[in-house]
Amino acid sequence: MTTKNRIDLIIPDQSPPIGKVFFLVDKEINGWIESLPLANIGETSRQIYQTLGEQNRTIIPYKKRFMSAEKFRNPIKSIGASLKKHYVDIGFPLTEKAHKTAVLNRELHGRLATAYKCVVVDMVLENNEKSDYKLLTSAIHRVIHHFSRVILLSVLTYDRLPKRLWLELHVLHRLACRYNLESITVKDQLEAHGKSSSIDEAYRRTILFHLASPYKIRQRENIQIFDALLEWSSYARCYNIDEAPPEST
Image (cartoon, rainbow, N blue to C red; front, side, top):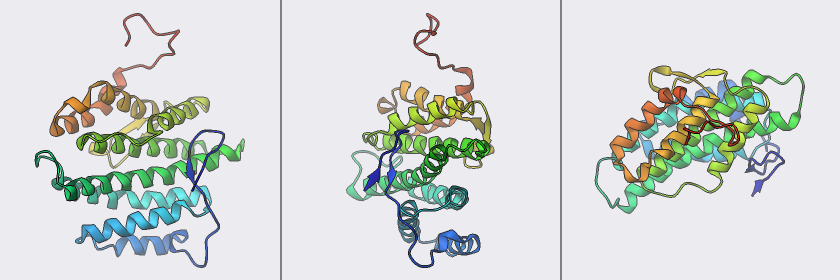
């Protein structure tokens, strides 16, 4: 089951933790991450997928949730690098196994995006004048980052995008603008060379990638375009329709 709220971001229904939950304790989650069998990508993927699902359905203070989610990013990046060989540059149509591998990679990014989305929802609904806007900026930026990976991975297998993805991307950008966070840069070690970018730039990258007609482009070229567009996005601007100059698209 999912919960819809007034800011139009859907998150799973959540309940209090039952018993001792390791992802609520920094030392224990660090130990769990270090013990992942990275040589066995299938088992590592299964454990992370299951744990993120459980975590997303558990009531957790948003600061602790954010820090916990951060620890999953590098393992998911490593998994993605290993899984890519099963569905990139192998020809189409993909075998059922290859397609399932790509979907798994996409779902891992989707679940991690949901973890950060839970942080955003909790912070915005708290409506506290003393809110940690640096944390809110990072959380919104992380959701957009992992949503953009969902878009790329969908394109690489020529699948449809998940429902509501574009709607929620627009909602996230609108929230950032409401709190004047859209121009603040966030460092992201998962980007090439640990590149910093703003919410605006990460959001515009997804739009530019869509405008490039990626479903008509080969996989390798799509990856190259996607990587380049984060930098190119700084040369693009978004306008309200009434304010757009005549030469804009």
